[in-house]
Length: 353
Image 1 (tube, helix red, strand yellow):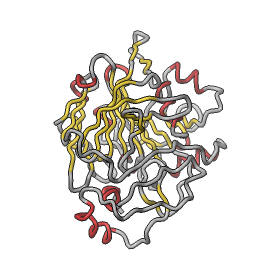
Image 2: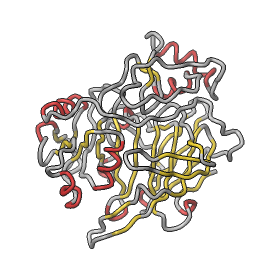
Image 3: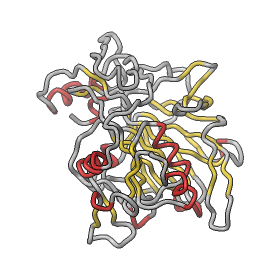
């Protein structure tokens, strides 16, 4: 069943699952709540899959799955340079983060857990200290090819669950000869799970407890069906267009649909999060320190509306979004996070209408 159809077929406020231990509890469904577009997609959802109703929810998406999801997430560093696009595998990610790297380029971190698929993931690139932080906040096995000096110092002899193509796990990656290096390094879920087992990493790990609602209270919030974000470079202008028929935001980059090379499908998300965070350049190469703990202004887009809110984070947890002191729920589905510099108001990076 397609994720977009599943999102609209859900008709309940789904209770968040606890880390690992709560993943085998049946999903609770309230048929009284119907999100926008559900009626239009119900017949399509029914015809798309003849499988029985799922009894479980995926921890990171709140979407129904046929069996409890307990495998440890994979946190994959994905190249976002123009020669690396279109990337492969992102339509199967549960969560995606987009964060600046050196020189104004951005890097993507795909968090993969609930979808078992055999297609490639990549191109895979190097890791930074704040990317280690993002991956570990989901309990993820870190997947990358090399690292900055500071990131390497953190990873060496740390005992962290780390699959590095250069240093400890080259056999579980491969090069695609149809693309030029270094934009041609890939792997698969199967290979990465095999590599993690070989290195004796735990097969499960605590994952964050998230709150989901298929019918969040957004009617009073400003409409926002078109979203644009500029990180630093004009060549990295990301935009999203909301489709009320699917309840999803379709992603474009520099005016062109951002698609998955595996299936030519445009990347979509049910939730868009934009965080304003302190960025500091600390060497001549342009390497960054990004503060993902101090909190600040945030925007949450869902179901064609925008919620101005605040983000906060405590040690050992993920980023949380709050308004008036109350945590905001996500619409069941994929969430995309975007971290922009705190060099002015959030509106200097993110515009919408």
